Figure 1 (cartoon, one colour):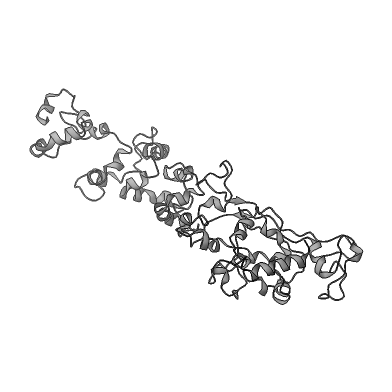
Figure 2 (figure 1 turned 45 degrees about the vertical axis):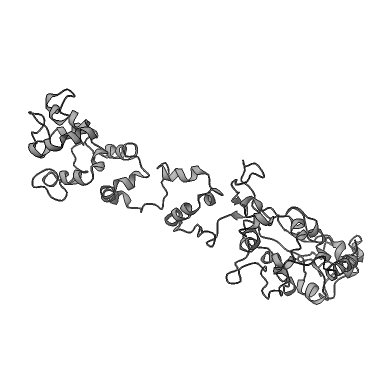
Length: 427
């Protein structure tokens, strides 16, 4: 269709109200060159992961054509009204330019230079990097397809004006990636709470984002693809405060607790359990000298360590190799490196650091290495062990021994047989 016919048809449609835009598009054109729905306070441009970098080798002034000459967007980008895929090329072919510039790219000898670039040869007047020695050597223009799902036709059918997503190009010289929409701008329509009830734009991730390999296309709630040749896709700070900054390992628990499904949009469950079940140790979780500090923290809060580490599988193996446990290799088992010196650890009087105080305060730390029979070596009765009575006082202990036996009989069986008559008084 000739350009002037398309432009006239668009003029008639506007005059008859057939292309009346939605309310936002009816507002005055924004003065910023950023897309109209982008945040005016902190526009950083579209994501490179979604919109890869471009190489534009065409001289084209949108301000001159749209603002000065009043050329409608669809005069050059008519395919935007019917395109249903981001893979479609919407840049106009040379024949569209020929209609106004009285040129003919079908016959390169009839291509004439534009008046805006006097002195340039015919090709170089529009094509940056053209070689004068080779009339056909035009620098290639790279406009990679966007890594997203987008249907121009569906948006155009809703009478959404171009400026709503691409900004006021009438104020722009060369239109670049800066005029492409941002996620925050898209959510002005796609994030509406009542969108589903109105049949309007949905806010599910797969509406716009490509799904990860292995996900069936169109599966609602599937994971989205985050790795692209042009960069990795990360959530911005304004989206659930989920910016993956260096402190996110401390903040992520709040984000995940508020909406775990939001995290599942990108991460498999294995990504979380790898750290939370102790199989993976994030390098930034403990400081570099933590091996010298962990003993203090382990004694203060063993259960916090156990939230990631299994005591028998993780702690004991290392302690045995270093000889800092009673069950370590022969010759180093009495090195005493794990416990304080004998005069503090076992000699009277009881004070801070004494094993009786430590065991009463945090028995979990003791049983991570020891079993009940280890205690009997010293705390025995009837000539067993060192002769230290394991019962605080015969009178007081017997008054409550039935409760102790009922809760956990294993310490009792370290000295007493199950049928021992001495246990009868505790039943």
